[in-house]
Length: 164
Image 1: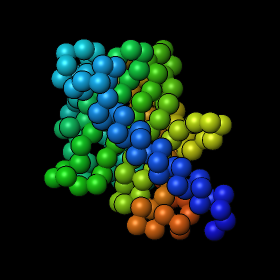
Image 2: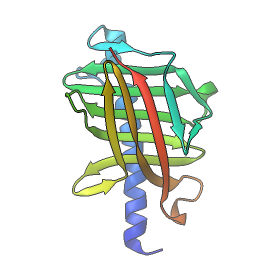
Image 3: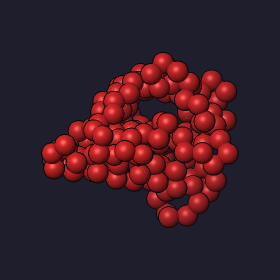
């Protein structure tokens, strides 16, 4: 593996970690998450789905998926079941046609992302909207955290969530 590929893999892992941390823990004031602080709107729905390669993302607590609209952004985050490693974090614009700014998924030990930063694009995502329901589909790329030098991993994903 060449040095350029190693740098991209390391940068991708860093982006995923940052995206998951920002989505799960931040708000504009540095206080509790926006939904708990009473600002923005938050919802989760029994109709939430997170699929990777056509299969439900095992180990992800779908009941914990939250969607918060605040300051022109839509933030989607989740928690794993029993403190496991699976996770989801998405930041997208709150526009008529939303655009995914960053997406992080942890799947079976692989840290995957969709992002565009500093001219470097990782993965791809598109969003369709039906009322308050959002469907995000695409390809997330990243690395196997157990063997990050093994090369890039790419997986197809589909996320359905209602955010009001």
